[in-house]
Length: 122
Image (cartoon, rainbow, N blue to C red; front, side, top):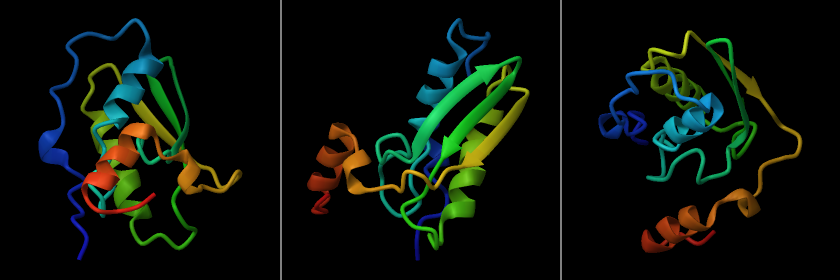
Protein backbone atom coordinates (compact mmCIF):
# COMPACT_ATOMS: atom_id res chain seq x y z
CA UNK A 1 0.00 0.00 0.00
CA UNK A 2 1.40 3.44 -0.89
CA UNK A 3 2.43 5.93 1.76
CA UNK A 4 -0.36 8.47 1.30
CA UNK A 5 1.09 10.95 3.79
CA UNK A 6 3.00 12.58 0.94
CA UNK A 7 5.88 13.25 3.31
CA UNK A 8 3.98 15.90 5.22
CA UNK A 9 6.14 15.38 8.28
CA UNK A 10 9.15 16.79 6.38
CA UNK A 11 7.54 20.03 5.22
CA UNK A 12 9.36 23.21 6.15
CA UNK A 13 7.86 25.85 8.37
CA UNK A 14 5.87 28.43 6.41
CA UNK A 15 7.46 31.72 5.47
CA UNK A 16 6.65 34.53 7.87
CA UNK A 17 6.24 37.15 5.17
CA UNK A 18 5.12 37.19 1.56
CA UNK A 19 8.11 36.49 -0.68
CA UNK A 20 9.27 38.90 -3.36
CA UNK A 21 8.94 36.13 -5.95
CA UNK A 22 5.73 34.28 -5.12
CA UNK A 23 6.01 31.83 -8.02
CA UNK A 24 9.53 30.79 -6.95
CA UNK A 25 8.31 30.33 -3.36
CA UNK A 26 5.41 28.19 -4.62
CA UNK A 27 7.86 26.03 -6.60
CA UNK A 28 10.07 25.68 -3.51
CA UNK A 29 7.07 24.57 -1.43
CA UNK A 30 6.03 22.09 -4.13
CA UNK A 31 9.53 20.62 -4.04
CA UNK A 32 8.56 19.33 -0.58
CA UNK A 33 5.45 17.51 -1.83
CA UNK A 34 6.43 13.88 -2.34
CA UNK A 35 4.89 11.39 -4.67
CA UNK A 36 2.93 8.95 -2.47
CA UNK A 37 4.69 5.93 -3.98
CA UNK A 38 8.24 7.23 -4.45
CA UNK A 39 10.25 9.42 -2.10
CA UNK A 40 10.84 12.14 -4.70
CA UNK A 41 8.96 15.38 -5.12
CA UNK A 42 6.33 16.26 -7.68
CA UNK A 43 8.81 18.86 -8.97
CA UNK A 44 11.57 16.27 -9.39
CA UNK A 45 9.16 13.91 -11.14
CA UNK A 46 8.24 16.67 -13.56
CA UNK A 47 4.56 16.56 -12.63
CA UNK A 48 4.38 20.35 -12.29
CA UNK A 49 4.01 21.91 -15.73
CA UNK A 50 3.65 25.47 -14.54
CA UNK A 51 3.31 27.73 -11.51
CA UNK A 52 1.96 31.25 -11.10
CA UNK A 53 1.26 33.42 -8.09
CA UNK A 54 -0.90 36.50 -8.28
CA UNK A 55 -3.00 38.42 -5.78
CA UNK A 56 -2.70 35.72 -3.12
CA UNK A 57 -3.63 32.85 -5.46
CA UNK A 58 -1.21 30.05 -6.25
CA UNK A 59 -1.97 28.42 -9.58
CA UNK A 60 -0.39 25.06 -10.35
CA UNK A 61 -0.52 23.25 -13.68
CA UNK A 62 -0.19 19.62 -12.63
CA UNK A 63 -0.11 16.35 -14.50
CA UNK A 64 0.18 12.73 -13.46
CA UNK A 65 2.11 9.72 -14.66
CA UNK A 66 -1.06 8.13 -16.06
CA UNK A 67 -4.71 9.07 -16.52
CA UNK A 68 -5.64 6.24 -14.16
CA UNK A 69 -3.01 7.08 -11.53
CA UNK A 70 -4.49 5.92 -8.21
CA UNK A 71 -2.67 8.68 -6.32
CA UNK A 72 -4.05 11.72 -8.17
CA UNK A 73 -6.34 12.81 -5.34
CA UNK A 74 -3.60 12.30 -2.73
CA UNK A 75 -1.16 14.41 -4.73
CA UNK A 76 -3.67 17.21 -5.29
CA UNK A 77 -4.56 17.20 -1.60
CA UNK A 78 -0.88 17.37 -0.61
CA UNK A 79 -0.27 20.24 -3.05
CA UNK A 80 -3.23 22.15 -1.60
CA UNK A 81 -2.27 21.37 2.01
CA UNK A 82 1.37 22.37 1.55
CA UNK A 83 0.56 25.66 -0.14
CA UNK A 84 -2.23 26.43 2.32
CA UNK A 85 0.38 26.38 5.11
CA UNK A 86 1.77 29.63 3.75
CA UNK A 87 -0.01 32.64 5.26
CA UNK A 88 0.56 34.64 2.06
CA UNK A 89 -1.33 32.04 -0.03
CA UNK A 90 -5.03 32.83 0.13
CA UNK A 91 -6.20 30.34 -2.51
CA UNK A 92 -4.83 27.39 -4.46
CA UNK A 93 -6.00 26.53 -7.97
CA UNK A 94 -4.90 23.27 -9.55
CA UNK A 95 -5.25 22.84 -13.29
CA UNK A 96 -4.90 19.24 -14.48
CA UNK A 97 -2.79 19.16 -17.63
CA UNK A 98 -2.65 16.14 -19.93
CA UNK A 99 -1.00 17.68 -22.98
CA UNK A 100 1.80 17.08 -23.46
CA UNK A 101 1.57 13.70 -21.78
CA UNK A 102 4.01 13.03 -18.96
CA UNK A 103 7.04 10.88 -19.80
CA UNK A 104 10.11 9.88 -17.84
CA UNK A 105 12.01 12.53 -19.80
CA UNK A 106 10.42 15.09 -17.44
CA UNK A 107 12.20 13.65 -14.37
CA UNK A 108 14.91 16.05 -13.19
CA UNK A 109 18.54 15.01 -12.79
CA UNK A 110 18.10 15.16 -9.00
CA UNK A 111 15.04 12.93 -9.29
CA UNK A 112 16.95 10.45 -11.44
CA UNK A 113 19.76 10.29 -8.89
CA UNK A 114 17.26 9.61 -6.09
CA UNK A 115 15.51 6.92 -8.11
CA UNK A 116 18.82 5.30 -9.02
CA UNK A 117 19.81 5.24 -5.34
CA UNK A 118 16.55 3.39 -4.68
CA UNK A 119 17.27 0.89 -7.45
CA UNK A 120 14.61 2.31 -9.75
CA UNK A 121 15.58 3.04 -13.34
CA UNK A 122 14.13 6.10 -15.04
